[in-house]
Length: 121
Image (cartoon, rainbow, N blue to C red; front, side, top):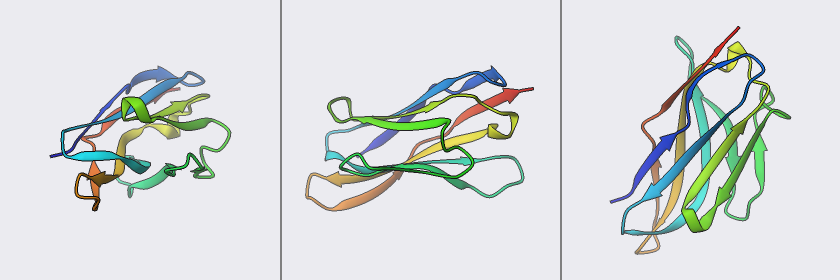
């Protein structure tokens, strides 16, 4: 079984920074192939924020370009989302969605439990 654990959320003032982490654990997978960070604000649909491919290529939503950086540490089986210059509109629950290569070399999709980010004005 694979488990994704997110951490790093919290309350921060506008202009501040937070770093989210998403760590995969379990004995039945080989590695994280690619990973996405999503967010969902109250009353809104879940939206894709950032993506990192297996080779490290990254993509960002227009709303966060230049402010957020996604990165990965394969040895630690962890993906990070560094969020700078935070705005009140970044307030949301942030979720990681990992595409995992399992021990049998199949690809499976897993979600973290979500971490709350609140940006005060």
